[in-house]
Image (cartoon, rainbow, N blue to C red; front, side, top):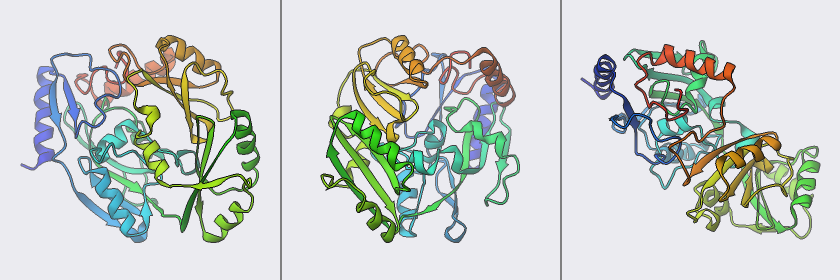
Length: 354
């Protein structure tokens, strides 16, 4: 009996006794999401279900098991001049591919290349009653059932135990270079607005402590042309900045205060943020350290036209994501009932009602 069959049997046994299961890989993101509602959960360890199943550099696709270390995949792709377009954090190398998909966390490149779910073209999962099912395919032309597995990205394991994932890839850019300069938030937003119409080859943009930082990615010719359009006061900075931002290694993140994650329109005002903030995704992702209540942070995000979640620290016993509308919650419940009829997979990890 291989590991996937062992996992399947564990789920079948748990479903029969309605024993809740806590799906874990390398536990790099145990802090993320709500505390599982059922205190009597048993661990379902998927970390040993690991390894590359199929990699076709010429087709720009890769299939790997959920427990495969993300860093191993990134290093393999780099050897062939390719990358995961959504630039996921690796959490000091502890993150697995399954956890990457389950949380759908993406890095600085996200606004320009797309989200995690945009690059999943096939998936194999175990449902909450032990069925071994596959959605999608291994090549981009074969994506029958694509919409059926898109909800898996970001579901935090509440819809199924991810076994294998097929991803489409992108080539590494020919050249990358980073720049930064001091300016106020209003000037930063004006520059970003102008650059949206200037075909600037941006692949990252952040703002913290009056420092506006960008990364340019593309062909050598495109980069040279973009550099000629930069303000003369912009200076080259180390490319390590983006990895440190993505892995939360910057001093800003070294703080026990609750860390909130707001996703808002990129042009939303910066002066309404309650607490110290770091802005990523060209203004669309706002990290906020604040002693305010989550309700107050939610109201702030809603006023800016976006959503908020408790990312790290703070209260994870109650809901940590923005409440769903009644119709949307009802839809989530219907999907949950189909995929996990006994309600045993990570109960309450995403929303208390699920």
